[in-house]
Image 1 (cartoon, rainbow, N blue to C red):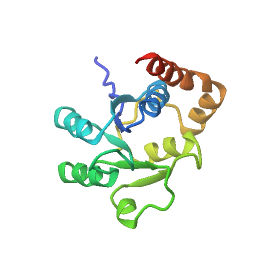
Image 2 (cartoon, rainbow, N blue to C red):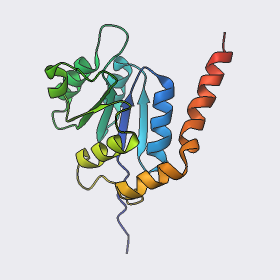
Image 3 (cartoon, rainbow, N blue to C red):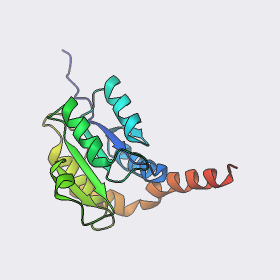
Length: 164
């Protein structure tokens, strides 16, 4: 008799700050998600052409011509049902940006629990990894071991500072 194992949810994180991406990857991977990273909208679209994802977490502001809102519109054209969560350091986003995504999280306002709650709320049913604990348990895990999340980003930043 074979058992059916559900695959962990695949989340694409898009942000031009590599250290932010590394922290998100460490946090989400530790919690059982399959995490892909893109540092710009074009890379995110290229990934979406090759791989199916269950949810996208994207930043609002990117250098260059394409904003997070523009990326959200392009992702919606490709897959109208794909859940999109936007992160922003700007609390006064235009209404059009807020309407382009399923959830908006203001960076620094609520901590990792806001992002984790939004991910849990917007993932398609049946795509949650069995190993992912409930949000309250995840928050406790993050509170007890925050250095495990920050260390990879600190190492990356130190490595980047050493590179000429």
